[in-house]
Image 1 (cartoon, rainbow, N blue to C red):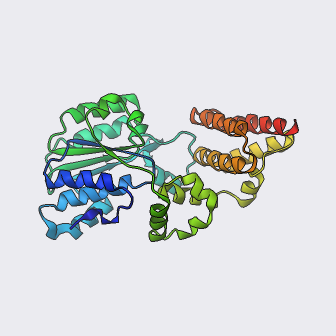
Image 2 (cartoon, one colour):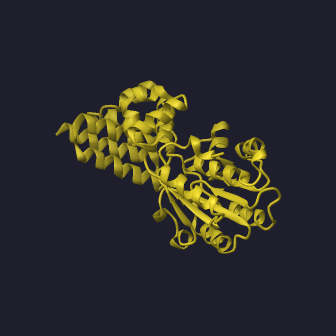
Image 3 (cartoon, rainbow, N blue to C red):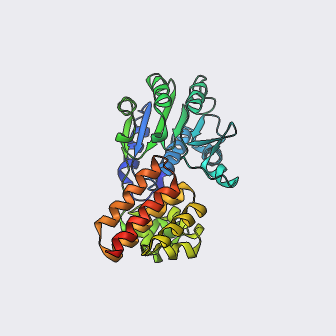
Length: 317
């Protein structure tokens, strides 16, 4: 049985992984490189399911449930975390607790040490142990260097790094991985994925589809972001402010209502809206500058005040 049947639009990646399984030549490490939301994590789960069940297909359903639940004894799935009061929280856990963080989550040195500990024992049920690192590009240099030692001698294990590109990781890490490429989906493939996942209504929002640029996951996340932002705020930001007082008030509302991740998404949304309205590269560049400032942890309200004031001044000319 082929576990990859639910993967849409990533034929090359599926082909490479199936060939590795059929030839029984599984690499010690893989880099699943490509844009967010195009099926990298889903493909990793399908690969693990196929690998774990290749020799014992009768246990497929049981293994699949364990893999999906994240409680398989030979699988460790690592996600970026926040640190809150000494406790590590994933992005989903932080959202459940209503925590708003200014800095994005990251894979921490302690998590890499847990990987080393996990791989120090032989696999219990599967032919090899599997470790998956989501958003591997969020590792700080110390964590990446610690992981490098594990990649050099993984033992009976395979480590999968999921990242947007090889350039987002240390070259020493990339050199020890077999690269599996992932690409943005065609319009037809993206439409198929959204409909099959029960998100066909997104196709009616042209701006969301445009922002996603061939990534169903990004389209779903964008729709969720749009619905989470107060409708009056969305209406207010769709047009650049014309007066300084209006710019300052809008900056205050953005800072008050949105965390940093939502503000970064809002920049994508505004770049699309403003380009559709004005075809003005200067506005797009101002917003891109704001994005870089937010990513460097500048004070969000100040970033928006400066950006929106510049827009209002330009509108007055």
